Image (cartoon, helix red, strand yellow):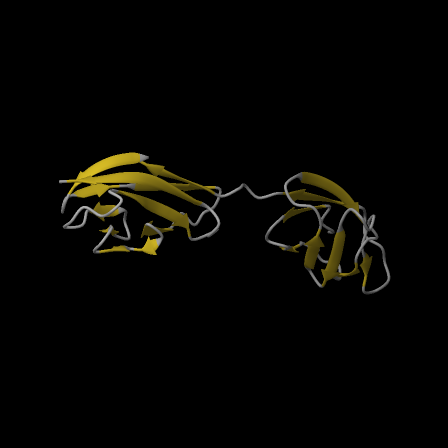
Length: 170
């Protein structure tokens, strides 16, 4: 039996398409050049096209034995955008004391973050330190300026981050 539906996720660029008992497709179906390009190599389809939308394409493949497949619908869905939120968004921390921050990452199964203080991974003795689980420890002396940024950057998408403003007091 030949598969009539396939799902392709934008951003992952490849899809292993079920071909049932038929020989794997060997040539792509022509598509409008300005719209998409799907190359099929064995049971793998490579998609090059617009990102950020859901598309439904009709495809016909020529099998290695020369037979033509039934038309199949290929649904192309853009992945959810990765976003990062940090809580609390502002805090005041006394010298040498701690404050717990929480990062929430959505749009990906990888919810890991890299914690930084003023852009320095893990921080330092001047601006304070932040552990891998978001526990900020204020420095021994009030830095100049007395407000620092504690940030969490997504491991899945390093262009996505959130930050909290922390004021350090005596």
